[in-house]
Image (cartoon, rainbow, N blue to C red):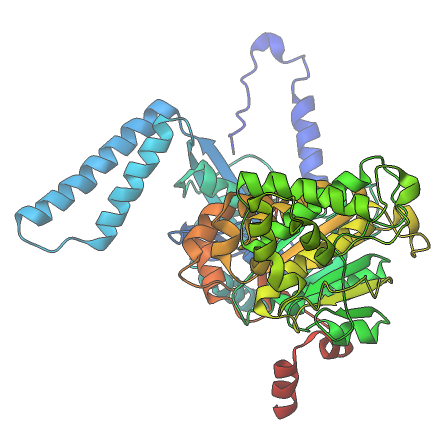
Length: 606
């Protein structure tokens, strides 16, 4: 604290009253200060309480976001103070150059003497070189920083236990603390809001490390600003693993409503998604699910939802159906374009240009033969079937490319895979939860079945079915589990991308769940789907995929290690500048609905 010196008064100043300010300061100190201060080597007795001041002298090689939260969450009274003094860039560069010279000299001396290199020296030299490069480019600055802790206790007998608890909490995150022995009074004054550092026990921090230590930072999601009130919607995801706080997230309040859940098998991604669905239903969100493994049927049955098992006897979907109630002038054109997409997925890729041109004419001719034209009055007529399209392609007047295309489509029109398309649509599901199951489909039909289901869902999102609960203003969540099945197909990935781009304008959200990071991140369209998801959730990852995930999601080294060692049900939420680690929590009844069969068997064994 700057020392106040009493000015000398000359003979002509004796009649003046310069002591008024001093008297005011004395009166203020008497009114606000403690009644007495008694200094001891390791503590102070201030009024009726006792304090001890600690200084943080050692830090781990890497710190996470809001690392002081471990200390600030201690239940007792603790004052945490941070003194920051910017270091001029020229002085920082000079000192860093000297430090690099010392480290390099030590490394060369060891080499000349034939000694093994010191790993600590090598690591420090590499860090110093990286820091010097960032300082030269203006990417960071250096600061002298001191961190001090003042621990309060009602009595001296309780102070020792409080100090031991705080030092233990600091040691748990590799922070070294030292008691300001014989300097307790300057230490206490350094933790008061006076801008005074009497200990001067400082370390050099760069900007990034200093930002992680900012006292206002928190591992929790930001709370509403004063006066904003509590948010009306949202879903409970779990508890923060760092602070045990509640992780409550509202996808509908973000810039878009899409999400991506990426995890290896067995990490608990389906469990998390089912909890999200169940809790979204509480908030009157309508949900449609593409379910490849019948994991959502028990949930649908419990909440009165609808399940549509594609591939079951009697279940047929006609991809040439026009959306009911759609009166847009280009409705027929949209349906023709989807037929192109579906046939590309059936054939494993886009046909050659000659076949595509022939196919476009054949689709239009098939609709015309069924009496359907661009006139909306004709759209209520029965739509043609896929086998009608092959009949058109096989017409003798068609070119050779049409005959070839008809032969390639024959397995899906009159061969082994025709059951799904061989007839008019038999079932149009509606309701607050619709599950499209694709487990009974053959592997060759899995991707086309998912595409047809997504198309039916999108038609309901784009042009809501008359009489559907919620009307035009209903929020809709489209969940695509095991999306890698569709992402492997070029046209299927394009369809997902278009849905991700257009969903927000229709008050809908697309949730993509996959365990294959290579299929999602290995193509431009998969990367685009991730980029268009404001909510990103990562769970346990395989070592083979962690490098690609770290690059795509800009993870720190600590976050990458966390994902490699994450347990079942632990996840990392990424949303803009928010990065929160949490573990899933569920009630007993929710667990019964959301857990897989294997999990329920394990619970019964326990």
